Image (cartoon, rainbow, N blue to C red; front, side, top):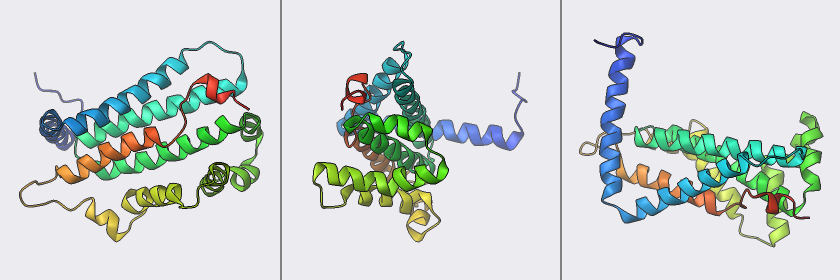
Length: 210
């Protein structure tokens, strides 16, 4: 019996997505590097899920757990979208992951900032915890001068966060490869594992470090 719960065109779209997913998985099966990147993503998601299950009454740690859940959901959605050919939107999700990881890294160095962030109104939050301010504080803490955090964030913004000519490239098919562009798919998977590595682990031990 045909599934009529969705309009015809959406059913057709889903079938096309499943075709691209099978092609993407075939590419992964032939590329050890892609497989390793996906293992890194899986481990990050597993860590976030383990942290979610930790029973606590500490409101600061609860916030870290919620941010971990946000990262878990983002990685899950990003992988699904990337496998289905939606590389631009998957890249947009990576920017969200990166921003959340940077925030957690900031909290890891000074737990008092968690409560300050929780209680801040919009004006105070944007003044003290905007993405730019968070990156600046991390660069100052670690003595980094190369602005690599900003460059990575801006790369994701240019490719997917805003309508730019670079974002158009993410949507342009090639004659032979069609909509499943191996180079874009590889870049998303590599970027996802880089997002795992450039921040701080989500463990309560790090969240509680002064």
